Image (cartoon, rainbow over all chains, first blue to last red; front, side, top):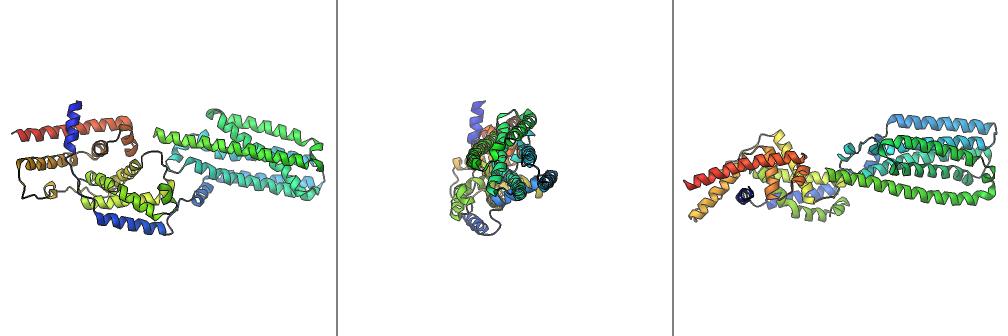
Length: 257
Length: 177
């Protein structure tokens, strides 16, 4: 059999192809160069991927996010208007932050939790690039959301704006990092349950911590700055691990294909 | 090189085309039954498609295989739009009036026979045979390029080989007479 195949292989080599037309190759090179110098080139740039991912996030997600934003601003405004203790609006934030971050993380990790990466891979665009864009969109929205509420609180409670932002950003960073760690480490099939459990833990922890009046004294601002730096490092590590995990999935799919 | 092209380096594109043009042209020529004009058109489309999607190129395998994937799809699309042009194999032969030794005549006959054999194979068998014999690719690589399963590629290859073997036997039988 092998001898027969060898004979065949030798025979098919007799099918010679004439020389590739040099003029057509030069024509192609010149066409390609003018295309590269034109405005159509780089249509798949980071900016375009970013815009495509903006469209990827469902309208329902934005409706819920904006709904929450309005509800929280209304609640904080109302509490601030009646000058209730700072603890109460902070508790509203302590409950809201893990919830809105969870909504965002679910959108970001949709590709893994619902096995949609096979479809997304067919776009031949790196999954990790898509995920990073989604992360940036959702992260920026959450960041502006929390900062907006904190600025409002600092206005009502006449507290220094930097201190007030730290009180909100530290829980935000910790929430994001905890969810990413949960998605990376946990079982794919049980990711939703793990994320909800993580959200409940975060809500309870933040509510308890924010009850400690001593943490909000002016002298404690340095400690909050340390918390902030630590939370940024924690979040950076979590993002790095998560993107590595997504990249691994992307490469695994390519190998399987 | 891909990174350079992604960044807009036109010289990198020049180098890439000069490196792979011949190989892709040969694939198209054989796949399009020896239609040289169509092969040059399709080869041009392959490289332009590559440029259009250059930002999405992920280099995890051989670059030639990536180009061959585009070439396979472009050729298939070509056949969907246009009826395949069957080229008269005799007209493709370069006339060699001066040297008509027996060896040369046999070689010419063999060339015609193999062209005819490959041309007459069904398209899905033809692309597998071309990739296997002229590019020396593994079954798994052919499966990736043709977007088919490994068992499907194996079966297409076996069927194609059987047909080619029949042609070869006929050719040799004819020779012996």
